[in-house]
Amino acid sequence: GQNIDQPTEMTATEGAIVQINCTYQTSGFNGLFWYQQHAGEAPTFLSYNVLDGLEEKGRFSSFLSRSKGYSYLLLKELQMKDSASYLCAVRDSNYQLIWGAGTKLIIKP
Amino acid sequence: DVKVTQSSRYLVKRTGEKVFLECVQDMDHENMFWYRQDPGLGLRLIYFSYDVKMKEKGDIPEGYSVSREKKERFSLILESASTNQTSMYLCASSFASDSHTGELFFGEGSRLTVL
Image 1 (cartoon, rainbow over the protein chains, first blue to last red):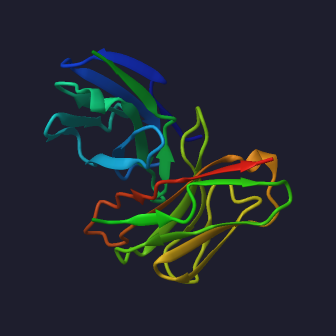
Image 2 (image 1 turned 45 degrees about the vertical axis):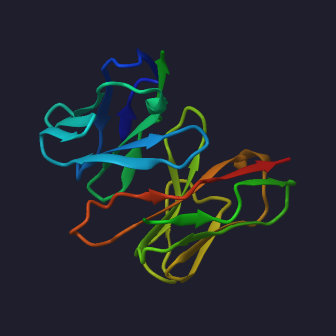
């Protein structure tokens, strides 16, 4: 079956760096997405990786290794507003999205 | 900015009632989707549509139907609501073109409680 694994919850300190991991086993691969979802709000797109390597976008970076079925989202200079759930999703060979359950990130002062 | 608007943020219905959830997007997206989101689970796809009057079943279509009469509007229908359909329902849309990543734009969600 198809599966996306990510930690349920993580805690980090304001100003620090945190890495949220995502491992996947899917039928084919056509890209990996990260979304951010604040409590009670809609998910919003953060990043997209289809080739191996690091994609940097301001304080956020996303890394992909297709051979290892692994990605991470790196958040630098954490701010209180980064407290949210982070959703990993993989597009499979049928161009359907498979979603992880999300990682709730708690930022402490 | 892309806007996806869901008709109701919060609904409370009784078992057996018919429920309509409306979703409208203003960016001329070809693709539209309905998901449900439950604690501890990833988003689960109920139905999707790649064109007007076209619909495809997702992973959990049982107990649901959809309608797409106009490109901008995608409606989710619960013919006879049951308590196990209590959930957050998220509508999303995206471009179909290969020139786009296919990122989804989500509505704010409709939290449905069935008593």
